[in-house]
Image 1 (tube, rainbow, N blue to C red):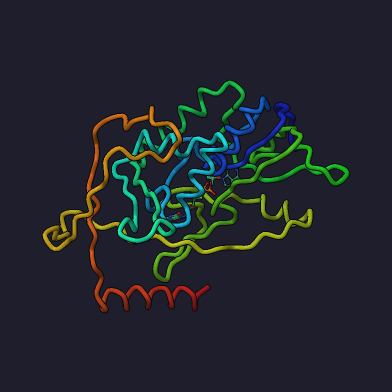
Image 2 (image 1 turned 135 degrees about the vertical axis):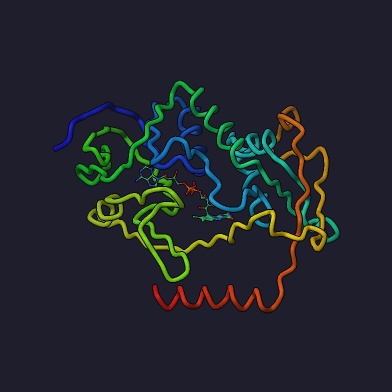
Length: 267
Ligand SMILES: Cc1cc2nc3c(=O)[nH]c(=O)nc-3n(C[C@H](O)[C@H](O)[C@H](O)COP(=O)(O)OP(=O)(O)OC[C@H]3O[C@@H](n4cnc5c(N)ncnc54)[C@H](O)[C@@H]3O)c2cc1C
């Protein structure tokens, strides 16, 4: 049983990094956008490393910026450290990498989204696509609410039928603390779109009180760098941090390797 909620030009599913750019791009072109996501408090969440840019990816951030996207702008306003990696090597392998304050990044991005009149943000899990005569004409959420549209952009990250593996345990989840997105994979499969799983990993979170900082190598950031074209945007507040590099040893490496192998065997 479903009922019609509203009609949009575009539905963007998932307010991660790709979804934010998609929704803003569509809205800038004048489209009326439904922006549906599992949890509106997790817009533009960085699930692990808060890095933007780096080898191979800094070019992408610049390209997004050149196309009118906002990732660079949000990074420039919220970074805690920025530097050119490989600066001692040739220009071909240098890469600009910023580390952002995770929470500030999310708040800044959410503010951009909520300030855009063409974007209708909604906390909803899209669980089904509606197809008529071979064309997508809408979507339905987990409560049976139906939204009509002319096109859908799916930017669902790791959430579709997601599972989390911790050691030998595994359970259904989107990201840590988030429910998995159920239903959409089956709906896509029914219409001939094949979905597959990819694996992602995250390092353990360590208690700062257990770290011997005197054994770590300090990597300071560089001043006055920008990931976006605009040199008008400066860091909101002076909250810069150095990055501390730790060096692993064979024992740590082997224990990590063993847990990965065990996980692979279980899958
Ligand atoms: C634990 C972990 C660690 C990671 N570490 C790194 C890292 O260090 N570096 C790196 O570059 N990448 C890392 N990744 C990969 C990371 O997912 C991507 O870099 C980045 O977040 C992808 O952006 P995205 O917009 O494609 O997807 P996401 O950021 O995952 O966003 C997807 C969004 O879609 C929403 N969604 C999904 N399905 C539905 C639905 N049916 N209806 C409504 N909303 C839906 C989700 O709630 C989420 O908000 C990591 C991922 C995980 C899970």
